[in-house]
Image (cartoon, rainbow, N blue to C red; front, side, top):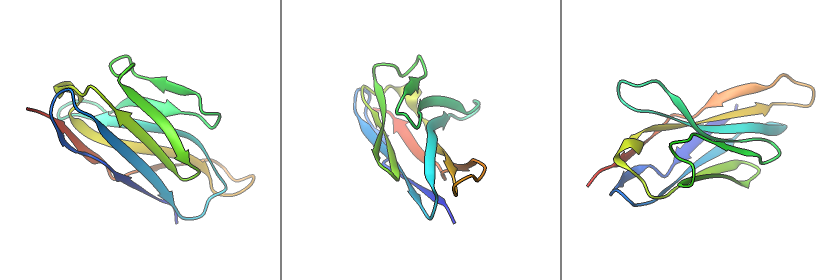
Length: 120
């Protein structure tokens, strides 16, 4: 049973930094793309950053130059968030696309979400 565990959210002042981590537990063959999404109150969930199996990255315009997505190891993907702004306040979710076994269809999993609040 694959599960995602997110960590690293919290309260930070504007201009501060946080590092979110998404750890994948359970058995699987390989991870393909991983994305970090966020959802603020009253708004739709939006893609913040993604990383492909080949480590190509993509960022929303609003976070370019401030956020960095990376693969820490075969089971963990992190999102380093610097120069945080109040508008970055949201629940952040990781989405992992993986192959559970060789020749199996790709599956998508979501984390439980972690709250990030940027406020003075």
